[in-house]
Every structure is written in structure tokens, then in C-alpha cells.
Image (cartoon, rainbow, N blue to C red; front, side, top):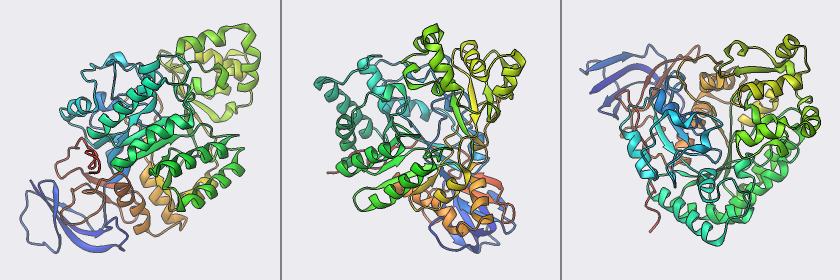
Length: 494
């Protein structure tokens, strides 16, 4: 197939100011850039003077966690906002490798019984995805908790020497088979037992593959600084490029956030640390994560049993009472769809109970499967963070089938909103904003054939309105179909 995109302002992704040109795509590759008014091709898109940008790269996504890559392979929420490549396997959870072929670790996001798991290794998983017609390119990290849970079950203990040896071999094999790195979710139940020494041993494997270590911090509130220091220590000790996932300035902890950003900037000499953010003031929480840490057990059943005991309720209710019920909205409530869209304050008033009791009731009714939107992010401080050269933009979102739930803007409008903010608030010129969401993450994840409008690069492209910065057309690989990505350094260094 040949495609001509004519009359566009090319924003090449590598920092060059926009320039007028036509772009010729042959098969799935950018064949030429120039003036091709009379060129005959299979398809023509008239750019009408709008921007043509490389397809955006979302380095932190959840469509694998929610199993949407199987149930909604077109992934239209990403393509509609110009995203052509997504990276999954974050926060310690991935769909591979599976030591026993089960996905019980995903039960806080989705129902694993809805899909047929016919793989164990990373190679088998990626080959299984090859048979799907994904609408975006997809690559995966190895989830620390996915492997650890298979080795130790729900036991909260250190790994034995032999278990750690097995763990290291599992990670090494997954990297050889195309994984882009390793992720931890140190703030989640199945990641909290990870000791810094254990993390360093596993992360050190990545160095030989030029792979990425991505981490959901151990604490994002009162111990944010200590958590960032821990991450810097791992990055410095191993020499591995490290990504802090969704580093948000949560309200009430702004001072720690400012100091955390300073730590990251000052660490540049000894560690390659980046972080990602989404340009929104609202977080999405699974209900169980709102509970105090001592109430978060290693399964939904154990957590529900804990919160049902009268002796535990006083402490739990006191903790939940500190949350703002007016700024917490129910996004999903399986089997209780009539609650979707209501605030916790609404539910409390309807039932004549306190907001804390309303939250506990919602947890019981939905077996902890409900999710809420909570406006707890300082948007002004977040906007300042986006300017940092060490900041990537990422949705931390997913693209589900239509259903009876609220869809957060970060799943549908993260990248256009970032471009709009960059322009309207004069954060940076358009060419720098585009570089931040294209060639820079491509380089970080070794996606060397993507992320720029350049002859010979894969034709992942987004046509964006010059005046309104809305996405008008998206081309994925020149053929409207995504690829299953393998890390280009998967064989390791010689």
C-alpha cells in the first residue's frame, strides 16, 4: 500500500520547527519527504496545512491489566488521541511470564477467567498477541509481583536463595524474548515485601540488555522523599535507566513533591532517572487502595474479612473519614450500575450514613471491584513538573469496550490536552512538546525505528489540527494495524 499525506506542517519529533511538506508512505515505512503534488498513490490524505506528527508513545498504560488488549483490540481510545505505541506490564503486574499459567494477580483490575491463557513465557505471550489485530503497537515489561507471587504464593516473606536464582533466570529469559524491562509496584500489597537488596539484584540484570526499570513508588504521600531516594539508590547502584511511574503531586504533600523533583534533577550525574505524569487533577483508585495499609491484605477475600471485623472498623473509618467525599466520584460499580456517577457524599446522604461508612458499604457490595475518581492532584505543581526534561507524558489509562462506567479523560485526552497546555500556557514550543511524547520516549525504550518523521522510519503518524490541536487522522505502521514489539536489544550485549 502507498499513501500520500500532502500539504502538512511537519513536526518531525526530533525538535526541528514545523515546515511545509508532503510525506510519502510505502508499505509501512516513510519513503520520502518533499513535494509530491503529482505523485500517484493508493490513498491520499489532504493535510490542509495541519500538523503531521509522529504517533505518540504512551510509556505507562493499563490495557493489559484490564485485559482490554484481548476484549477490545482496536484500542480506539488511544488511537483517537494520536497514540500509536503503548507500553504495558507496569506497577509490578504483567501478563507474562507466568510460571503456572494463571493470571490471579490481575484480579484487582479484571476477571482473568474471561480469556483463554495459552502461554507461560514472554515469547509465547507475544506470539499469542501476534495473532490479534491490535490497533496500536504494544510492548511489555516483566511484572515483579507477577513472578514473585508465583514463587511464594501469598506469603509475606523474603525470597530464599534458590527462589531468587529462579527469579533472576525468569527475568533474564523474558528479556531475551523481547521484554522491555522490569517493573515493580512497591506501593501495592504484593510488592511491599520487596527489599532494596532483592530489587537491586533483579534490576542489575537489565543493564546487559539496555532495558528499563519502571517503579510505582513505595509511598507517594508522607514518605515520598524516602521512596524517591530508594529509587535513586537502585538506579545509581545498577546503572540502569529508571522510570518512576505516575509521579503525582498529591494535595497535602506538595513540599515533599518539590523536594523529590529536586532530588531527581540532582541525581542526573549518577543515575538516569525519568518520571511520567498525566496532565489531569484526578486520580483513579481501586477501592481497596483507599484502605489503611494494615487493612490491605493479599487477596480481596482476606481484605473483606478484615474490614468486616468490628474491632478493625474504628481505625478504618477514622482513616476513610479523612478523604473528601465531595471530590470522590464512583467510576464503576459492578452489578450496581445505578451508583456510577454519584459522589461518595451522594451515596452517604441517600443511605443516611457517614461517607466513611458509605465507602465501606460500597467495598462490600462490589467485593472491592468498584473504582472511584478522586480529585487529589495539585494541577499547578503538576504543570510545573511537565516542563522538566526528565518528565514523560503518559496516560496511565486503558481503552475498554463501552460499558456502564465512567471513562476518565486520561484514557481519551491525555496527549491532545498536554499539547494544548504546552501551547496555551507557553510551557514550551510545539516542536519541544512533540519531542517529549515521540522521539524521547522512543529513544528511552530503544524503539529506534519509531518516534520521528524521517525517511526509513516506521510510518506511525498523527495528523493534528494546527489551530485546535485535535487529532484528525492516525496512521499506525502505514496499514492501520499495530505491531507486537520486542525489545531491540533482547539478545543482550556481547
